[in-house]
Image 1: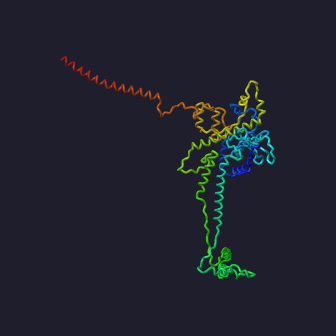
Image 2: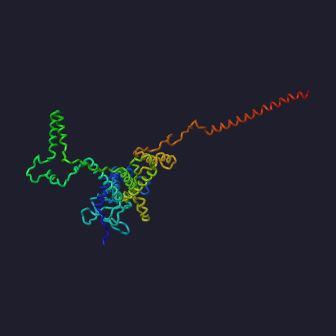
Length: 471
């Protein structure tokens, strides 16, 4: 018994259209894709101690552009459907277009299993097609899509309805509708019903004439003709032409009718706030803070820059990890023969160890989430090398890596060496020692000076007293 379910391709088409038409979704997509693919993709083998694989050095620059384009298509497919259908070409992989296949999903060993069929063919498996479904948005067992777009589709539809309603109200305000109202004169209208009917139409008359139309307003019409004659007689021809054209816009109502204005509806007062709320929800779904794209917060609300920074950082790290798996698997599948040629297979060596050693890993050199001052401090402390410091610093300021100097400057007093001359304003340790020594000697001299006058006076008195004693 076949327990597979067909995925609704019409729903996938609807999700794709909403994804392409929503400006907010495209802004979130551009923020993620630009930050991930701004520095291209890199290839390393094994533990990534060697930054480049030997057998891809011969490839031209077009190779990296093709892989970057492939990574961008993966982002679009995962955001729309939650999975990606990859076609393994002869040289480069590609994401299959929506109108070229249809899918079935089933459960095998408690895991979802996908079957890719050709469009327009009956149960014909599409060769070289692989479905990657490790992003956490796998469809249900019934074939329903469970992606990021499905979570915000209802909100996008609501916003579309609100915009259409606002547009319809503006059209009504630009083209107002007027109605005529018959004033009650107090007389019995039932008795005059036949007269009113004959006023508008005479069923017995074979031909209609001007005298039978608007008999009650014939005097008013003659007054209108007289007014036109006055314009033509007393004004110059240019003014007469304009006046006659203006009088053409005058509509004479039947006697007893008056214009009644209809009630006009005004637009919603919370239209902008509704958009802000839904923008917050859409940005939260894609992991991109709204404050990174809009700076409309007032002074009363404080923005958490650290939290915003960390949120977007975690989003990029998640995409970096998931995309690296897809790109690494597709690259190893396409270049398996070249990789095997470089392996020296031994009988006693473990196969899993060989795979880990020679497997090619594709990674994204994302801009580091630290400032250049912190990078400089790490370099001066010997934590990172000159090459790492230079590459990260250039990526922070969006400069090409080719501008990096091959060696660090030998003498750079401003950055990496402290100046030998000490400032004159602050006293040094030597000056402090000499000052203490001078103070100590000065204090000792002052003490000796105080003692000498006392001893001298006592000696003189003794000398003076001695002759007196002799006497």
